[in-house]
Length: 433
Ligand code: AMP
Image (cartoon, rainbow, N blue to C red; front, top):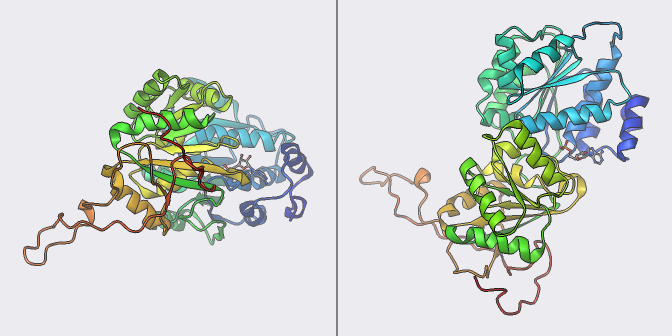
């Protein structure tokens, strides 16, 4: 299947070929014709599948169908809602890339940037707004934005928006939009709340399913290191240094943890930057730019800040802390192995996190291969208690946390084995720490 067959205009085809794309990805093949036909679409597409072009290309084409070049100021005809500022910047970049031969204009409305500047931009007018919900609601509250001309609404990474508690904002925004519009909802996973949102937002939607929710990309090989909490940092430095990893995205649970690990890695001589929600927008952009252009080799990030990052050919993702929500494991490792390239995802798991690993494996319906010799004191990743799932004691009715769940059989590989490769012959332990 070629892009020409999808019915896209010559201006868009030109931009696509300038990007070097020859074949539409599955989500593009499936979604683009429906969107061009004016249908509402509910798309289950995980990150890295080419979903951004999947909605951006037909959206640009639809806007061109009734484009009035004399309209001044320009009215907002398309609204794209995203969970994070970084994703907003990326979607804007896609609009600019694919729309470079079209006369359409777009603005980003996100928190952390000057509200007055945004007001001036809004007064100048634009065809497309890409926004995070909080700042958009601020502008609505101040009556600085007019959404009455919106013909197309896109919710990108809708599951993440709900996880982040943005449902009330989304509802407020929906209340300000014309009823007559085309709506598209993209989500990596389908929870009951996503289904409920879809039923309120979409009219007779066409369902597009390109990757079953809750599966990870085949291009990513995964490894688990069972390691005591206090040894994680040294192991991480060792893995980066000994394997000469040049670009590693490291996930941690907290903002404070991100700053601390960044400092520690820098002390270990590894060029690092941190990315989290407490950083100013300027600092976030700078950290990401440094990481993309190789000025730092490690980006230590929290889930929220890392959401939607698209870094070409990112080779390594490390879960320094396991995510609290198992679905986040899929989002995190989706940062690598994108658009056909291969990647490795490594999880450093302490005994305290064993229950989180179990939850992830349950979600994936498979075991993650575990390194047998980490070079450190072996630790057990047996789940010794699972407080939330504990069954009531039949006689007392009280929850009994004493029962330990036996660890299931694991696949073991050796420490220096690159994920997905054959085990290397191991010499003596690599170095003492
Ligand atoms: P996304 O899932 O939208 O974040 O896209 C993931 C990556 O795939 C981005 O780097 C896109 O530039 C790239 N991409 C999108 N469409 C194609 C395509 N048809 N062929 C090759 N790469 C693509």
